[in-house]
Image 1 (cartoon, rainbow, N blue to C red):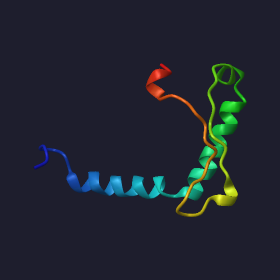
Image 2: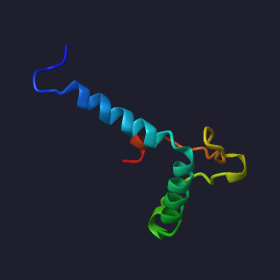
Image 3: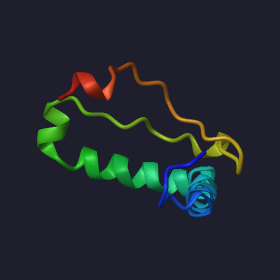
Image 4: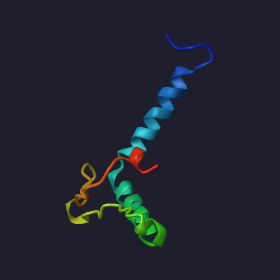
Amino acid sequence: LAPPGLFLENVIRVGREELKVECDYRREVENQKRFRSLISSDAGLVADRFRVPEVIEDLCTDKILVTEYVHGGTIDKVV
C-alpha cells in the first residue's frame, strides 16, 4: 500500500500532532494577531495592500475562530 521506506505509522503520528496544533483555535487567535501586527508594521507590505483580517475575540471559542471579512484574492495571484 505504501512505498518502501515510508513509515506510515510515523506519517500518521505526525499528521495527528499537526492536526491538534492546527485545531487549537486559541493558539490560532494569538498567531493571527501576531501575524497581523507584523504585516501592518511593514510599510512595503501595507503599500502592496497585504491585509490580515482582525480577530473578533469576543466571539471566538475553543472551537470557533471569528475574524472580520476581508475581500481579497488567492495567494497564487500575488506572486
